[in-house]
Image 1 (cartoon, rainbow, N blue to C red):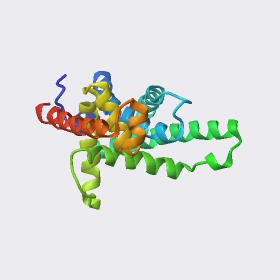
Image 2: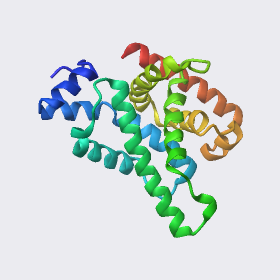
Image 3: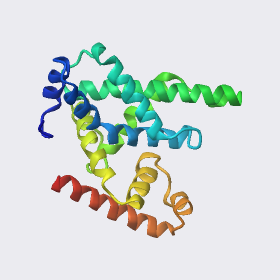
Image 4: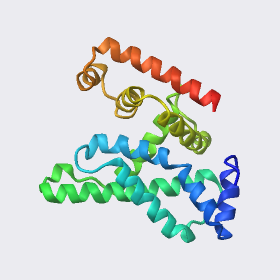
Length: 204
């Protein structure tokens, strides 16, 4: 099966019962979900659970519940996957909050969903400037999925600096402490990482 099939065609084949199509469809968005989970865990649950576990759980639930997905296009599929991921993040946040009995850590599902959606848009803004208009939001989420796959091909230090600076929106000084570099070196690393990401997108 061609790797270049449009998401809408893969969705159609999934509905026709083609198991290979479903495997290919969900594999396409594994990196995308990982980046979103990593960004949200960085803010709320850094040491409590691994983003890869949340992604696996999200994809398992997507496989299980695919019959309930009513959309036909990539933007609809991504929104559905983000909702599943947000529910899983919310459940982890509630479990952690209950164990700690800390009301300050309580977070609503709407807040978690908004955080996941915001991270998706931040991913797209790695390459473009300015806020999106409402008509551009769905297209940006679709581009974000491809950007996530390109990000996964970058060296680990490039991925780290982009996750911390772009998604967690941390100042260069704090990122420098985490990475054992100077703030100036972090800013230069971020510039090189963005250039590498653009090159990956252009050559893929």
